Image (cartoon, rainbow, N blue to C red; front, top):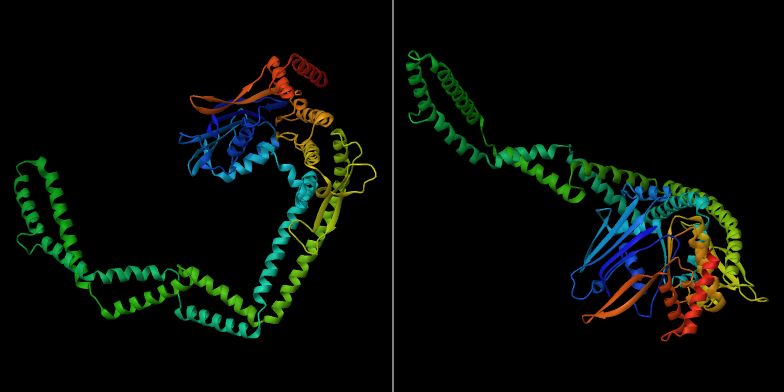
Length: 560
């Protein structure tokens, strides 16, 4: 359930803080007051694209924050699968700060990418925008709705079909790439042989390049090594009167000459003798190193040439010797297949036929499940449409089979409807008006919501193109849905607004030469006043007010 919406510096909203409740939450206001900004704000928080122009003029950022109360185990598990951590009290806090061309999104205080927000949205909320009913004009939407209705039984087999279709697609791609003419195949065989031989002749050994780099580095800097070590040896050599070794030796001997007079100096004398001895060892080892240090031009050239060979292969086949050797294995496998071309082609075609058989099996099962649930959905939709004032309605889901496989089976479905007695069933996109499409979408949303009771449902002007008795039926349907769901609905019809459990008015006013949109919860008497405005327009007469009062009273009777 959506508990709170906080919006700051977005479009015409300076700052708004709205607390929603269970049941039917109605939002009304004059045309142009900014009703859709509220729904737009929720969409922004859930990852929708937003232009920097949406930041309120004079401000450097905009902020939208949503607070949800999540209690359904299925929702919690789905959120955990996205690595979304929940608060101990079950609250989920989503915020998005928009700053020019970038934004920062957080879920329960942790920064997340936009992709996570977009994944969270469908788990916790279902938003029906002003023009979403237009999607019913497209066949693909018809299939999506049916699959959503049948998802518990359908999803496992659909996943198998999707995985198999990916295998089938890859096999087709591999065959197309492999199936070449004789001249092209001969050319490719020649090139593969060249690459394999080039790597093979190099006789590469893993780790060899690192060993050679160490030796090469030493040889390149051998002169500097010689000069520095010779200088150090000269400073340590005891044969040099001013060397460190000679000075330290004299100091040690002088020190020993006075130890006999003070036994407390014995420890220091011993340390000095150890240093003298250690220095002599260093000098001796250094001399030995210098004696063995040689620069052989032939060795240098050999190492340099070997490194050039290895680096050349790296530039062509991979930056590591292990990668080059792996590349060679792959090319050997490909060469072997090309050398056995006819058998390989036959094997590939056989694998494709096997995959087609599995796809046929999965697609057939998918069709069976869809048709079973289509019969149920037809009856449910007819019942819901009758509740929405389609008195003589017939509805049917027609199936046709594609001439090719897909990841979604091979079905196409088309919603067929007749809204008047004696009329033939016709495709929905050929006969339904805008108002009828809105009611059909509401019927479908009602049915799908029964399967997914935990979501918050938001309707932005679901009442487009309807009035009178039909509007009353729609209001009753929305109220029925709201008994098991939190429903938030923007409407311009008093029949729908009268059924509100919570009613909010959205108003636009000018303050300090700035246009500001505000949203305010209404008390019972204020609800009646707002209904009167919706009924009577600019001037609210006593008769209009009494009519609004009666409408609210009758609505409350229906709700009780």
